[in-house]
Image 1 (cartoon, rainbow, N blue to C red):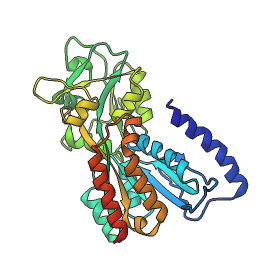
Image 2 (image 1 turned 30 degrees about the vertical axis):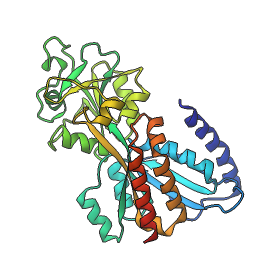
Image 3 (image 1 turned 90 degrees about the horizontal axis):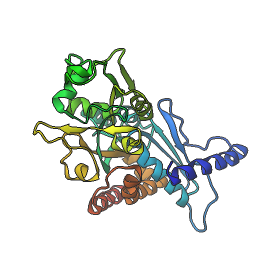
Image 4 (image 1 turned 180 degrees about the vertical axis):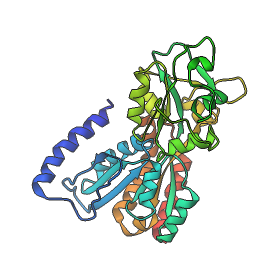
Length: 335
C-alpha cells in the first residue's frame, strides 16, 4: 500500500472519533446512495490566518478514483476546515447526480454525453470539463495464464461481443486450452465500459451470462481475473499497475501486426491505440462561483493533478495544459 494511502486511513480514523464526539453532519454535507464511499475528509483545526470552510462533494468514475483519493488527502493537509466527500458510482452515476446539482465535481473516464448536457441545461447547470491525466485501458489476464501474450482487436470482439465466436480459448487458437473464457467487465454505469463498448465493440451488445461478471468496483474485477487462469478483463491502467505482480497486461494489435502494451510512453505518445484516453473531472460552475471551498479545491486539483496522476499510475498532462485549465477556472469564477 502506498505511504500516502496508509496515512490517509490512519488520519481519517483518528479525526472521525473527534468529529463524532463533537457534532453531527455539517450543513451541506451529502450522503450518496450509489457507489462506495472511498474517502471522507473531516473537520480539523484551523491554521493561522483566514481559513476556508464548508464541504465539497465528489462522485463518479472508479478509474479516476485513485487520482482523486490522492488529491483529497493532500488538500486536507492544507485546508483542515473543508470536508471532502468522495464516492465512486461510475461515470454515468456521477453524471446522474451532477446534472441535477447533487454534487460539486463529477469524475469521468469518458466525455459527458449530449443527453447528459441537456439534462444539466434543463436544471440551469453548466458542467465545466477538466482533463486530469492520460490512461491506457488495460486488457489483462492472470499471471497464471501462460499461453496468451497479445490479442488483436478482432479477437477482442470475438471474445466480448454477444454474438462473438469465441467462448473458449481454443476458439481463438487451436493450441490454447479448451477452457471457457471468463469475462470480467466494468458495469453499464462505468465510463470504462462505455469507452470499450464504443471503441472495441462499436456499440454492439456485449456478451453477458454465466461466464460474465459485471461490476462498478474495479477491485472486484482485479480479484476475479487474478484468481482464474482462464479469465480476461479490462480496466484503467492504474489498477493493472497496482496489481502487476498478479496480473499480466496484454499487447493489443490494432491491425498492423505490431502488438503494443500500455505504459507511460505508449499511452502518452498515442501508440497504444485504440485504448489510450484522457480522464476528466467536471465541476459545477454554479458551485465554482457560489462556494469558495469548491473554487479553492478545483484550483488545487488542477495544480496537483500531475502529481496525482503519477502517484496513481497514470500519465500526467504537459504542464502548459494544466496552466491553461487553471487560467480558465479563474476566468469562470470571476464572470
